[in-house]
Amino acid sequence: CLQKMEYRKSWTTPAPMLSEKNRILRIEWGKKNEKVQWCHAVFADEASFWLRSGKIRMWIKGNQKAIQPTTKHSPKLHIWAAFSGMGTFPLCFFRRNMDANFFFNIMEWHLLEQAQVFH
Image (cartoon, rainbow, N blue to C red):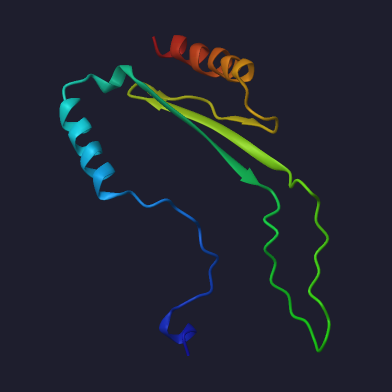
């Protein structure tokens, strides 16, 4: 039995593969920028999490259909995060779609305020 061999069922997570060309380009970029004082740089990113994946396993019997009611657009939560050599910035959780104005507000509320604390 696979469970006795310590296997378990799991959903897959899609992840883009890094091509050999891009791997080489990243290494070259890193070597070229080795002497940059990265403690003065801020690294930021955002991610979206769908609150209902639509993937549900269920047991059915005979001719029953496995139906799960859904909505057209699943609710999602966005998270913005940043860090630097000086420390981490507060997480920003939001549900609306990101646009230029909202991005500017995040920079102002989270990035600039915390940068002042660091100095």
